[in-house]
Length: 208
Image (cartoon, rainbow, N blue to C red; front, top):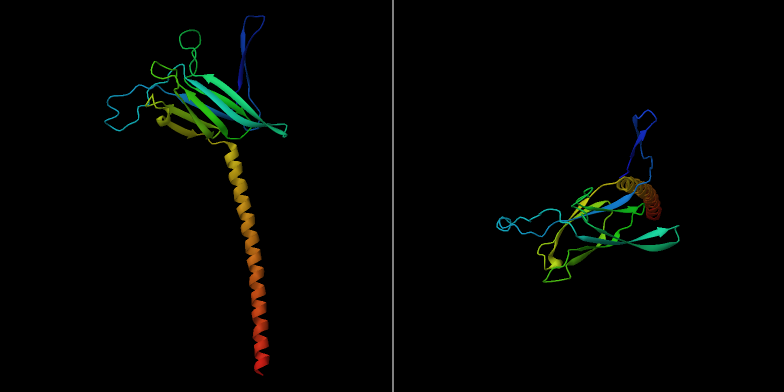
């Protein structure tokens, strides 16, 4: 989204003034939101065939790799990393998820790797997801914990203005193509009628 700013100012009379600045950027921006839940197993969920979502677990790692275009000349690979709820015991509490900004590049996210802190049984508790859609939210449920290939994931999409623009462009293109096809079909029908009349007249003259 577009963050707005709230500025609190203090003057000489020890009075405070609140000023709001609205973001006027019209260019669409992109992000991706990742949330990794706990791996606690619910004893009653398995019997009801429900997926145990659990709570937000601190310490999960998220790495991302995507390709962007700089100055319209060359593709650059961008790698980012973040930790979910790295600070949960003091000062300001963090958000229970990770938001990674992608800028104005609407490319697919090439790779997203979600990792869980290792334990005594395994030190390779991570899974990589490829070709993720921008402006989406990914919820990862690491169950079963010791088998990352079977981890569950949910993808939630957030529509943006580019979807509307793409739909309008697609609709206009289809209308133009339909108009061109209708005109060509009309001309072809006129030519067929003309050839049919010429053939009918030629047959009439031959019969005489």
